[in-house]
Length: 484
Ligand code: ADP
Ligand code: GLC
Image (cartoon, rainbow, N blue to C red):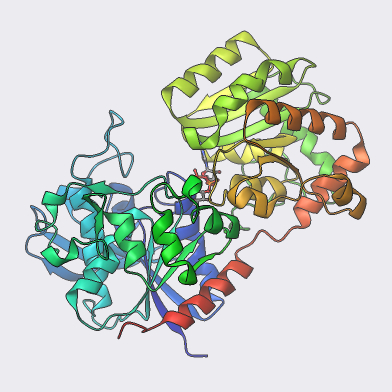
C-alpha cells in the first residue's frame, strides 16, 4: 500500500506539554501509525516547552503579521516526534498551561491563538511547506476546529479531514464579531458553517466541515448523539451519524510498562505480582499512609473536575475507610475538590494521602502500588487511567459510562465464572452506587485467587495502540483526498 501522509493538529503533545489524555494520544499515535505505513507530522503551538524541545528547527515559512505579530513556521524533531511548530511569541510565549493564565482564567486571546493553529494547518493542507503535502489532516478537539473551516471556505482543493473529539465539554465558542478578524468570510456564519448558538463555535465548525468524525470510544460515540450526552451538539452528531465512529484509545506500552518502569521501587510483571508489595509500601510511605500490606489501598490519578465525579468519592469516603482501607490520590484542578481531599487527609491521618499538582512519577507509582483504581466519572470519552491500571495489575473500579464501559469487564458472576473479569463497573453515577462498588471490591479482595485473576486478566488485555492505529489507518485511507 502507498504510504500516507497525515498532518495531525493538536494543542498538546506528550512528553512535551500535557494537561490530559489528548497529549498522550497525540504523542503516541504517530509511532503506532508508522507501523501501519502512515507517516505523521504534528503541528503544535510554539509554547516555551515546545521550542525548548525542538531539535534542529528549520524555518519553512514566515508570516509578516498574524494577529499582531510576525510568525515563523518551523519544522524539526523532538525525540521520535516529527513536528511543525508555530513560533509566535506574541501568542504562545507564555509559561505554564497552554490554555489558562496563572490566575486560572482562560487567556483572553485564545480565539486568536487557536485560530492561528487552524489557519496554519489549513495552509499546510494547501502545500505551504515545500515537499510536504498531507493526504489527510487530522484535527484534535476545539483548538484545531477551525482548520476544517479555513480549508472549506478557501474553496481550493484540499486533503481529507478527520476531526476527533476527545471531550465535548470543551467547545471553544467565541463572540461572532471576531469573524472577520479571524479571516473567515461572512457566509461562513451559518448553521452549515461556523455559527453555533449565535457564536463562532470552533468545535462545531470542525465537526460540521470535516469528512469523518471520530471520538475515542464506541459508547461515547453513541452517548454524544443523545440530548443527555450531546452538550448542545447532539443534533449535529445525529445529522452526521453516518460519518461518526468511535475508536478506542490505547496507551503507550513503552511508557507504561511495569517491567521496566523507572519510577517504580520494584518493577514487576504478571508472573511477579508479589513484587507489587514493595511498590505499595513505597507509596504508603511517600503519601504518609500507614505502611500496612493488608490494608486495601485505593488509588486515584485524575484531573479534579466535575467530569471526574470525585465529589462522589468525598461523599463515599467515610464508609470506604471504616474498615481500615486507604486512599492514595494524585489530582490537579478544582480548588474546592483539592480542599475537600486535603481536609479528608487531615480527618483520616494515615488512611488518606494526597498530592496535588501534576506529577508524572507519582502517577506511575500509584498505578504500580495501589490495589484498585477509582474512576467514578460522570462522563468519560475514553479514559486512559483505567488502561494504565489494568496494565499495572491495579484493578479498575469505574462508572459505566463512555470508554470506561468499553474497556473494563465487570466482575459479575458470569464474567467471574468465565474467568474474563478485569474490574468493577457501577451505575448510576452516584455516591450510593460508588459505595456499593467499593463494597464489592472489598468482598473480592480477600479471595487471593479471584483477585489475582482480575489482575492477570487486566495485564493480559491488549491496551496498546496496535488495534486503534489500524483503525485510524483505514479511516485515513477511506477519506484521503476526498475534498480534492
Ligand atoms: P483526561 O484526559 O480527561 O484528563 P484521561 O484518563 O484520558 O483523562 O488521561 C489522563 C492522563 O493524564 C493520564 O495519562 C494520567 O496518568 C494523567 N494524569 C491525570 N492527572 C494527573 C496528575 N495530577 N499528574 C500526572 N498525571 C496525571
Ligand atoms: C479527554 C477525555 C478522556 C480521553 C482523552 C484522550 O481528555 O476526557 O476520556 O481519554 O481525552 O482521548
